[in-house]
Length: 155
Length: 155
DNA sequence: CTTTTTGCAAAGCATTTGCATACAC
DNA sequence: GTGTATGCAAATGCTTTGCAAAAAG
Image (cartoon, rainbow over all chains, first blue to last red; front, side, top):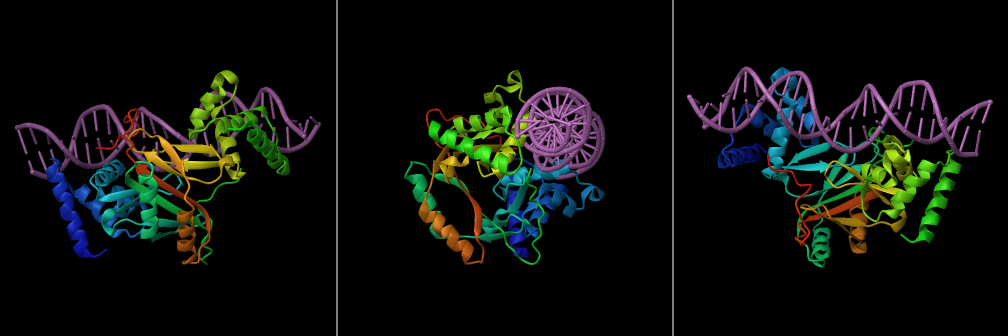
C-alpha cells in the first residue's frame, strides 16, 4: 500500500485513540502497520507472526484486542470465508466483494455497482436500510498452483 | 414444512446413505427430521436441544456428524452470519440469500434472479464458474421486538 | 457376524478474559 | 503519578476426535 495512505491511516488511528481517551502504544501501531502492509486477507494469528510474534514482545491477545478496536473504529474490516477463521483487511481500499477458491483458498476482489444498487433495492422494498453487506462467490480456480488445502469435507 | 416434502427428503436421505454404504439410524433420522421441522436457521446446539438432548439419548457429537453428512449430501446448507456459530437449514427450499438484523439477529430470506445473473457475469468475466455463493445484507430492523442480543462490539 | 455408528469424555482451535506488571500521558 | 494497555496463562465456546460399547444390515 502507498506510504501516503499508510501515513494517513496512522494519523486517523491516532485521532480515534485521542478522541476516545485511549493510548497510542508501540503494539497498536505495529498491528495497524502490519495490516496496512498486508495486501491479502490475514488472520489474527498470521498478523501476530508477521509482526514478529513472541520474539518481538507482542502477545496474541493484544493483536486480537487491537484488531477489534480497528474494526470498531472503521479502520479495518472483518471477514469470514467459512473456514472458521476471522480474517482482516484494511478498510482504506474501500468496499469490495470477494471470489474465493474452495480448493486452495485464494481470494480475488471485485466491485459491481449494479449489484450494489439491486441490493439496496431489495432491502428498501422491505423497509430496511443496509448498514453492511457481504457477497462471496465460491469457485474452483483450477490454476496450476491450486491445491486442496482448506477443504476437509467428506465424512 | 409440507409433510410431502419431508417424506421426499427423508427418502432421498435413505437413498444417499444406501449409495454410500452408510446406515440409517434413529439418530440420523431425528436430526434430519428436526432440521426439516425448523423453519429458522438453527445451530447444532439448538437442534440438539430440539431433538430432546441427553434425555432422548442423543449426543452433540452425533448431531454435528450428521449435519456434516447432510451438508455433504446436499440435503442441508451451512451458514455463518458472523457471530461465530455455524447455522443450518434444509436445502429443500432452494437457494436464497439473507437479510440479517445486526441488533436482534432476526433473519429474512430473499431471492433476486437479476443479482444472481450479474454474479455469474462477474465470475465468468474472470474465467470462473460459481460453485456456491453467499449474499448477506445486514440491517437494523427497528421492529418493536428488536433488542440488542448478539452485538457485543465496542471495546 | 461384520462393520458402521453412537455417546461420552477428552482434545482441538480460535478467541477472550483476569490479573499483576509495564507503560503512556 | 494515574489510569490504561500489555502479556501471560487460564478460561471459554464451538466443534471434532478416540475409543469401547451398541446397533444396523
